[in-house]
Image (tube, rainbow, N blue to C red):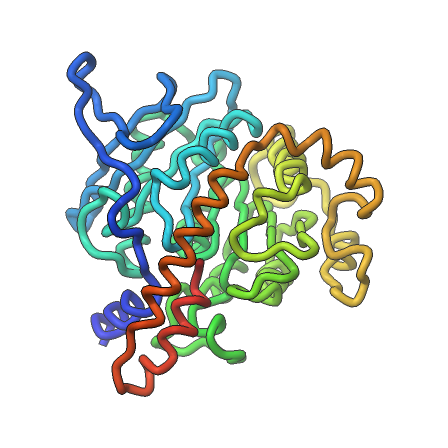
Length: 354
């Protein structure tokens, strides 16, 4: 029965870019792997092929920041791959002053195998194991970052790491089925049951979500935030959609504040981050029009936005990602068999991610 569930989940949830946006080759001068078809790959980047417990080879890129004390493990969303995400990864490493490792799930980019829920769990485990064994990174120095579908493997791993430093959930899903239907309980055939795992995460959690997200509704982010044990002030980006949150200046500003807070704080237990529950709770109420985002009020944002925006030059990347999304949605819309489950394919595919 589990195999049927996994197959169904793969059909509904996973849409890797085809063809991949990058290549991997061995550099003749160094004998090391490098990315091709990707601009601005500097010497501080190491390209890896990591073997999972299921035998798949996952492609990852490790970006070293010499000033970093923490390492960000980034699980990207759907309809994207490592080549499309690389510019954002580089800028996050630079501006957050962290080492960053990003990877492609099985069947994405140049990673081997087929996409499935279980494979993504093995994929992130292989990447985390690489951080421990190859880069000597300790659990308490790792921040897990999950974007949309990437919130699934992120919370699966986070629920099993008691000494993790922090977690970031970006446009996260409560579960796959909840994206499609307003169900109140968890069913056996659901995928990425994040709503059931979030309470097992012991470290501070930052939730980022757009209030106008038409793919994964803002209510998903709010539900996950409400269930967090170690809440950090969430970021509700007013007017933000599913694939454009990086363009808002408060995104990088709030992320910087969070990373700085967890970096300065102890790594274990309740004392990780100064409690911000009351302020955060009030910010989750969409009935308060002036407070959908936990950054500053709109008027003060304007002046700060002008200073922050040049620091994160993601416009070109986001336009490229948006075009990928449109192509994916167009391609998805032509699919359709006569079963009742697949009548919902268009809605499901749009809903799980871009």
